[in-house]
Amino acid sequence: MITQPLGEIPEKTQEAIVLHLKRQGELTVGDLCSVLGITSMAVRRHLTGLQKDGLIESRIERQTRGRPTYKYKLTDKAESLFPSGGSTLAVDLLDAVYEQAGHKGVMELLSIRNKKRIERLKARVNDKPLAQRVEEVAKIFSEDGYMTEWEGLPDGNFIIYQRHCAVHDLANQFRQLCLMEPQMMQALLGVKVTREKYILRDDPLCAYLVHASEQPQELTQELNQDLASDSQ
Image 1 (cartoon, rainbow, N blue to C red):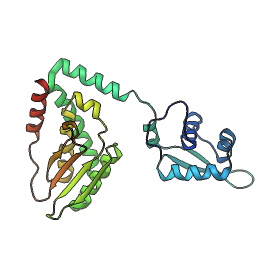
Image 2: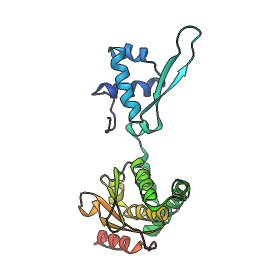
Image 3: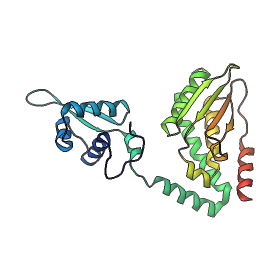
Image 4: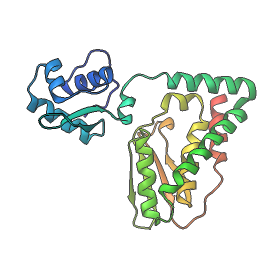
């Protein structure tokens, strides 16, 4: 499985396949055999692994003679393996907002974006029991790169773990980002969510307790404490 951003020079065969597909768009098994210098059996084995990881997809191209050919290309998920200027752009935008309107302006901008995401994601949790909503929310954050897991507790509550922060560097500068996560969880789950562990407070992960029988709460107090501590 490829987990790190790719450079110009691949270190493994699967990385080389991904880079060739990025440069060429679509390739067949035969094409990959030619550029990699390995057997078709080896190419197919690597393609199967990449498909399992959701990084490539295939389509059938009919031929005038003989059997149809499969062509392979990268999925949208694979785009995350390549360097992007998105993080720098986000920092620049939030810096500009902060210079013009301070912490309040940053919070307003992030809240607008969060509300729009919540509206788009509601269809994934509507009409589901709480346990299934928790599972879907964990899946949503994993798709965003947070390495998220969840489990049910004996008291009927749930815990959501994030073992990686996908916006760690940005959140270090703008703690308002960290408020967006529990707000989204509450909006999608319809119950109270509290942060129990916090990577930016030197915990090994972020952990959120889902209170199955309690209503959502106002979450700005924790943010105000973080901003106050940052300014000291």
